[in-house]
View 1 (cartoon, one colour):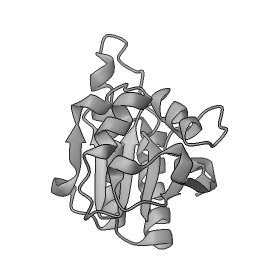
View 2 (tube, one colour):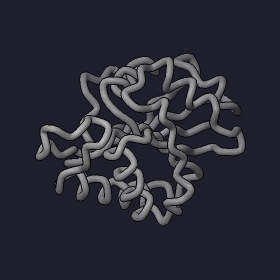
View 3 (tube, one colour):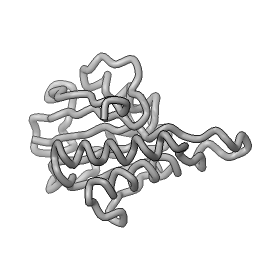
Length: 162
């Protein structure tokens, strides 16, 4: 059984309109929500085996803040440049590279790719809000074999609910 927690980055700042999208930081709400969601996940599951994140600033910061709340070493967060604004195909390719020794992974990324991914796995969702998490279980022993056929929706936790 594999457990995938799909987390969208926290709310980002648009204060500097000249800043490249890749380099946008979180705003105050994004910082708060990312930490709170990490605390929620710790209470629900304990420490994850892997946090896999896009390498963009807002996703790295979201992953780091969640990791602190989860008592997960920040230097163990795996950054993947391919996850930046990735579509379903690229996201599933990144997931397939996860070691099969890992059973629980938090994936931190961007919309619209994450909402599309959740829908691909059979959950009808219009939009995955910032700092929110969808939990899916997969009846498989390998990450390469996760698919809509073996996906089981567990829950959606909105950042405003934690």
